[in-house]
Image (cartoon, rainbow, N blue to C red):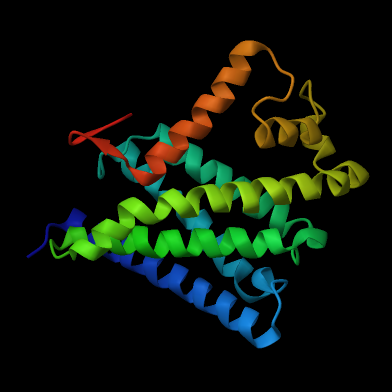
Length: 223
C-alpha cells in the first residue's frame, strides 16, 4: 500500500500527464487536419492555460516538503510560463494564430508528457529506463526550442501590439517602468540595465533551465 503522499503525487502527476497528452493530441490533429500551424491555441489553448495554472500546486509541494524541489525554481518556472500563456497568449488575440504559439505548445506538451509520466511511474517504483532516458535528454532540445523559437519570438512579435494597446498600463502605472519595458528585459537579458540586474536575469534563465531538466552531477543536483 502506497503512503498517502505517494498516492497523491501519483494521482497528480498522472492527471497532468494525461492532460498534456490530450493537449498535444489536439494540437497535432488540428495541424494535420487544417495543414496549418495557426490553430494551436484554438485547439488546446484553454486546456493548457488550466494545466499551467494548476501546476502552482508544485510550488506548494516544494514549500511543504512533499517533494525536495524547494520553492524558488519551481516558482520561477511556473510564474514565467503562466505569465506567458495567460497575460500574453490568452489576452492578446492577435498573436494566437502565430506559428510561435504552435512551437511553444508542442515543446511544452511533449516535455510535460515525459516529465509527469516519469514522476508518476517513479511514485510506484516502476519507471522504465527508456522513460528516464527521455526525461533527462529530451529537454536538451525541447527547452531551448520552446524558449527561443516559441516564447521569446512570440513576445517580440507581441511588443508592437502591447505598445499600441498600452496593455496593463494601470497596473504598471505605480512602477518606474512599463509593461513594454518589462517584456524587453524578460526577452533579452542584455537589455540596458544596471549590471547586477543583467547578471540576475541571465543567471535565473540558466538556473531555470537546469532545474527544469533536473540535471545531476555525480548524483547531486547542481543547484
